[in-house]
Amino acid sequence: MLFVSGNTVIELSVSDQDGPGNNNGIVEFQIQSGANDDFVIQRDTGKILVASNPQLDVDSQRTYTIIVSYKLPFIVFIFFGCCRV
Image (cartoon, rainbow, N blue to C red):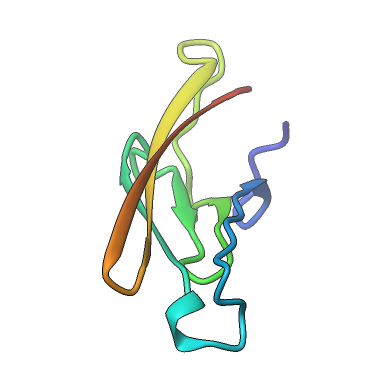
């Protein structure tokens, strides 16, 4: 994996039975922990990207566990994910 600012690491997706045309189906993602300022998330799409000026060192750390939550109006879920570089 090439650690260039803006590169997509993974894209998370969830769906709601209300569908995308309903305000109850709007999903918002947020990184809870593990990003170490090296990764960012697009709150509306769920794409986890390499941040600006990442300090990633694959010689010292090859696995990153990033905890992401997503919320629908009135409900919050937490997703535990791991990516190996």
